[in-house]
Image (cartoon, rainbow, N blue to C red; front, side):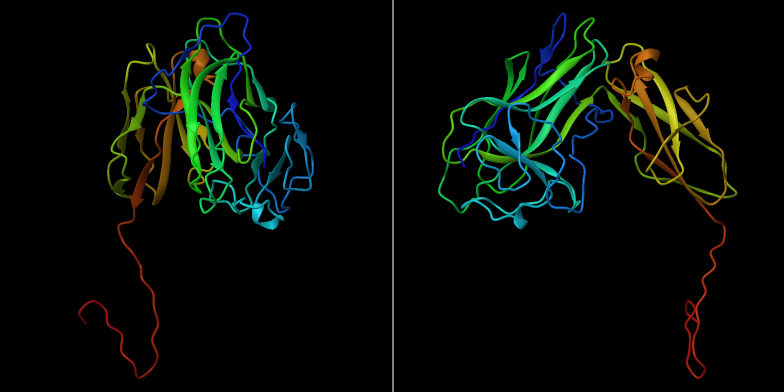
Length: 330
């Protein structure tokens, strides 16, 4: 239980000019970390070493000792250290994995990720869900304290992560400067050891962010199957993008996957399909044509549903001989 955790974001660039704590009050893009949620699985502990932590040792026999980590979907299946809580990951998926770290007394990298192909002059947000593994019912122990760093410089500090039994979201915003297109993210133990400082991490997000990208109103648009086509308008609130460009998309599986709508690049589109059903729309927004083509540089609007309702509804039911059936007031 002698452990302490500190998150480090280390940007490896030829010429670094990064501006921390840039405001991001609008929409976000897709998470650039493909494995930010650590995946999911039926087995309790991932058996293949994911190689996330060059300064730590992976263990397949939890709980991890000092300087070890593991990927698991439920600590309740372990023979836990005294004071450690039985937890699952921070999502609603009981089979989802999380990273459990027993941080070393000495500083050491326990997560590292390099990202290429970013866009210059673009705002990004890095965040992670973190939980203090020590039960609230135990006496106050040393609390983890997580620092976010860029090129070894602290940009954000969580303060003491509370011993409250809850997942907490921590993160910060920054903007890349001219010519900056790659970076390295690292998480590192950065504090003295002791009794406590044990935690789990999940949902590591690194996403581009920009202005509000909306399709209003947010509620579904209801039309009848013999009605008129309905226009959908992109509403952009904010001046983060000087030259905004749009690509409309449509989903045919209730938002699970999306397809670009050929030629639909204007501020508005027209829904003209009047067959009964629900139709899902959204759009990508970016600051240039090149950024729009790069998933690491564009943001996503809210999802808009157009609901085409039938003119007639047929209700079928059955009843037995000698009984009655009420239809309306009859």
